[in-house]
Image 1 (spheres, rainbow, N blue to C red):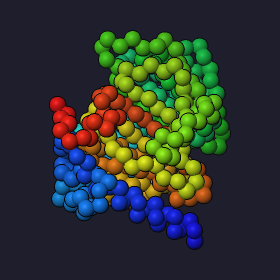
Image 2 (tube, rainbow, N blue to C red; image 1 turned 135 degrees about the vertical axis):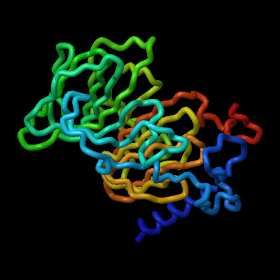
Image 3 (cartoon, rainbow, N blue to C red; image 1 turned 120 degrees about the vertical axis):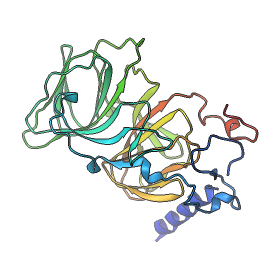
Image 4 (cartoon, rainbow, N blue to C red; image 1 turned 135 degrees about the horizontal axis):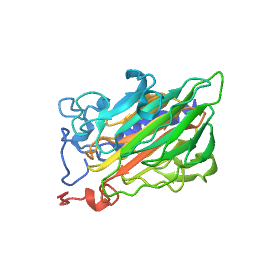
Length: 317
């Protein structure tokens, strides 16, 4: 009963937090700016102008199956997200501006991919389930849940599912390199299990690195983030130049997204609209920890990091 009461108070607090910061910001279809003030205009929903946040959530289960795709050597792939305009998506999931692909992949039991390389693309694989092996540049590395694999442009690689019964499953993230970019010459691997957790960001986030020494063409980073039992992350927003994705790996969370509440099960991801108008907060309402794969791609270092950008008189230009 005590937990129910606390959870109710938490939810009420969250919604009371969302009402109009002062200042002028870029507008992308929503004219009410989230705020902490109770009597501001943001204390109502405006369906005709509110950002349609459902366009920014997508499950790979809703995408077609690309069986034996030659793109990454033969993984069975389905898209979480597609290239598109994150300020005005043409369909759910069409929100990728800077990275080229964000997919779910699986490899059949006791099989392997073809040897593959990409001249202009780099690929990050996060192993979500199963066991296997990857070979690249003379290196052989065993794979299990929590392993990350970074393949630089130009390097030939091959994956093996060494289990005779279960799929090897991964989140596959691909970027295209710029013309003047000099990629690494070797594969990088690691696991979040070998990284020290860092707690406290956004109230409840516990972050862990995955692979050290990666070199992306984009200002991009990936990490594992967890939220402990019965806790809530700070609602916050992002603006132009930010491509941030949260993919649920463990548990079924509640997601405060804009002024609506959603379930986020495993296999679903969301990208925060880059308009400074849509708060997001992951809520763990259970007795077990939950886990996400975080991607942060920040092309404007100003972003929302300083309070001055939300003060009256601030001009984005």
